[in-house]
Image (cartoon, rainbow, N blue to C red):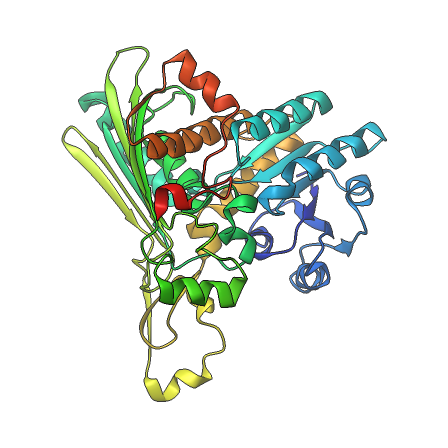
Length: 413
């Protein structure tokens, strides 16, 4: 089996999650990292866990010379700059077989189109990392229900939610750098997961045509004076001046182009879920059948008393975004696999070695960006948007939400 040599651009939270997942992927090595922070720590982790002889490189060009593929795990606001550097490195002789981009592909449709154009210019395969579509629970449910769908008809309603108590890094909270709030950060997950689940078995991921979207955004917890001050003290981001939404919800209607059937995707996301930690909740309903996924249902539970809690070094060793280190805790022994990180890395490795795009490519990531931005526009106008209207699509091409412009107070407060 041919080994793919990977390089990471970025060494923060998501890069470390992928490094942990890489321990479960055959024929892939982490051979290099370029990052402004934490690069040395990630390289040490890679070496200690047998992921490869990972070296720290001073720039993107040097990293690209020594890899078969690179993964962009850096913040949203530097995506275009970094991919431009990757393409320049390829023009200078770097022989990359693929480029990975973590979700979201871009902060606006215009940025997404630029990234797709850069990849096409370089004639390089791409992978858009949307881990939830690769979750074994979802894939297993769809496989189990495949014969049922053929007999009874396809899924007609999908609900997806992702919630936790808020991001780690300050830039995630800053809408002018991140591209918005929780809709941009996590709504992209839920929209993609629902669209995928609704898609009839055997059809391409963009088979169903988006017809309309109705969405709402709100600032519920982190706009209150007490928590706004806490956020300012902790991150330096002032939600009195440039707030972002900490809650979003919406419904997207899709049409089956072969049968004309309309189906619905409902998404809901928040940065105010102060329970055990990150929760992914997904449901799908078809005629005579259904499935449900809840990431907080674990075969392992741990109890820690008040008297023993001081010995707990890090609550997140139990669960991503955990908010407690005592009481009855849900523990996921293998989060990287549960959330789909392992399988999306396997898919990218296999695709790039075979000289093709991953199951989800950047063109697909651009379609998700369009739907996210349509959600912001719907929320601003407080109306359902007709996604089949060419005028709406044209407007989205140059649209930047008020929240991403730093003007969220106009609609959130």
